Image (cartoon, rainbow, N blue to C red; front, top):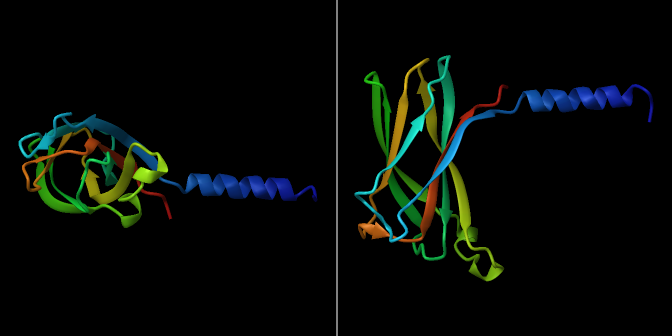
Length: 155
């Protein structure tokens, strides 16, 4: 290779890395082992960020093979101190290729899906609550549920 090729390759790699988003918060909470009821609300307390942020909220699910449905209906409740409150009803679709992995030896199916943009004011505590609204009132097969907050990649 020519002497100038390696510095060019390194510069391209650094530019690509600089343009990717950054995960600001990512945690899971287990659902009750006897089943997740409509009365069970999962609470996520996001840290207060020092700057006003425009972020992306994603939901992550770890499903066992006891989960029999093709989708999951949830309510996501967001509270930022007493300043801001939203409540959204969302449908999470389980992709067809993840509905039949039982024969492949995996014990969980993991799904991560973007939910909505998240605007966080500087130094405000933010709480996000998630509950399901499926029928029947108690569902099994959801091992845990996670929230991920990413800073979007710069263009």
